Amino acid sequence: MGPGTSAIYMIIHNNGTDGDQLLSAEADVATAVELHETRMEGGTSRMHKLAAIAIPARGRVELRPGGLHIMLLGLRRDLKEGEQFTATLHFERAKTVTVPVPVRMTAP
Ligand SMILES: [Cu+2]
Image (cartoon, rainbow, N blue to C red):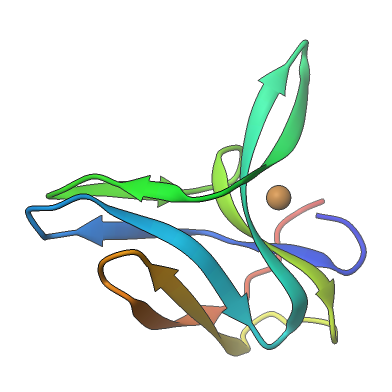
């Protein structure tokens, strides 16, 4: 997505009876991690920083190219296809969740 940046995509499930919110994320491969949403505006896609991503009760939210994503900014090193790093997600209710993130290259 540009030099020194990348994005994390995943599906977040909430099996609970209460809604939850993803509040922030961390990954040691990046100096900054932000919650983003890509939206089309006047024919061009632009990314917006979000304060949180809501996960509905007994529902799921898909983070995917062209939509919601976790943005990695200021990568500390090149990410290589096939490697894996760890991301830490902070939720309002579920608290801290650590997930493995496999690296895949996508066409620019
Ligand atoms: Cu982004």
